[in-house]
Image (cartoon, rainbow, N blue to C red; front, side, top):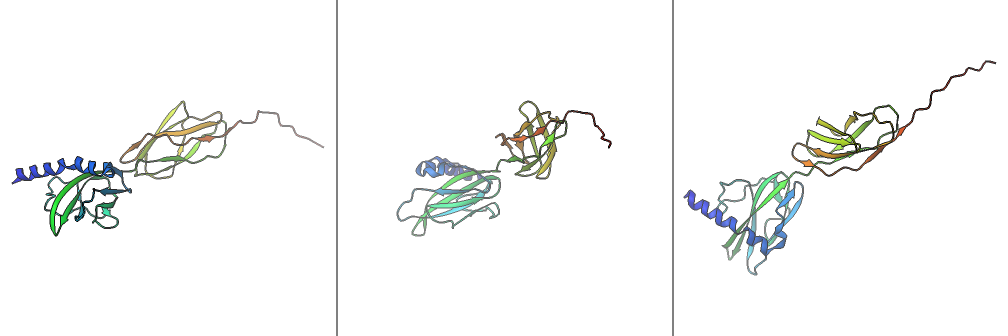
Length: 222
């Protein structure tokens, strides 16, 4: 029985490319959490369609078992019937979806697809800083998206500074190297609890004002 079930699942999964070819919109099989995607097939007149969602579970018999995906992980936005449906994906993971074609109350066909949901890549934004005097330390405020803990690499174009174990956003950091003149800073890489984003952040310019030259102090007596 288990072998027959395994063969059946393999046969179902084989039809995924066919389903993709029939409906170009189906080519999207990776989304980020919080995004919506449209699942669809080419409609055959007279058929009705019902969709179901499954969590990643290879023990599921897609032919007989109903969808087991909790609404906290993913759900149909405007119902689960019709040749196309919209799904909101909320939680990272691998999911399966099934569409069943029926006519006159009889099931005509089943097709299975797979969707991988990724967490949004984290983003780091450096807030503009107040001017400092030459020789003073630079304190930068960095706003982070994603799931703590974070780590990121800050650069001034010459030196790279790595900050790790950040658990709150925004985070205030002290640049290890004290600048002697106006300097630009940006973040080259940020990592949260799930994924790394290597897209550089926008640059901020830290204005560094020179200190006045030393001079004698004169006292005027009337």
